[in-house]
Length: 283
Image 1 (cartoon, rainbow, N blue to C red):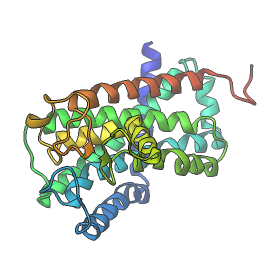
Image 2 (cartoon, rainbow, N blue to C red):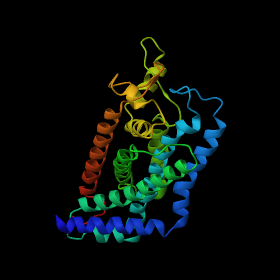
Image 3 (cartoon, helix red, strand yellow):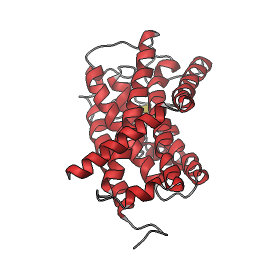
Image 4 (tube, helix red, strand yellow):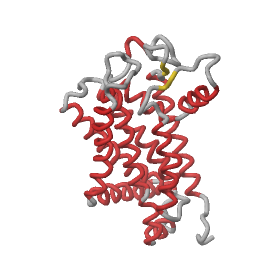
């Protein structure tokens, strides 16, 4: 066990050093979401109608931008699995004495630490710009942020492991990961479900409600106090905590346990995937 933890720590440290030695990756992972936040936040301000009548789109989009930074950083961190396999480094790690679970733990911890640091830096910049306030809620928010980063990075490991080319991984990103973010309530509020509404709206509502990324964005929105007030909403309804009945939003307790469950399932499935023998490996 100790040998496996040491191996995981070295892999995580390698990911950290490797990432920050490539400044263009840092700029891309942090700069593009910030650009989205500024452009969409200012451009869609006049057409936005959210759960809180007093909020602007830039305020509403802040938690979604934070989740997008986690997603982009996880993608850039886990794509190194394909590069390591191509360069022969991964084969050397696979035949090492520590168990294969240490590979998943090292990659997930390294990518999560990078994503957490970049998201925290973005939130600090948002605070300096006056877009949010700082207070006691930052302590649980930073903890929630790391759990969310662990969940998304583990999902990235799960998607990257069976891929043999970066093109295939980008296809998965465009087909699965980006739609998960778009359908998380990050870009637009989730409409409430009502009996008798068109079937298309009902299907869209339940897709967004069943999306685990929805609870990451909703949790960040409430912990950052940029959405519905916690004191007025969490205790009233465990399923919907929005102050506007036309929109749906998860309660903070629900966001915590769904995000933790998402992280456990994603990490466990990634370990199971890595434990399986891949085509071309020695039996």
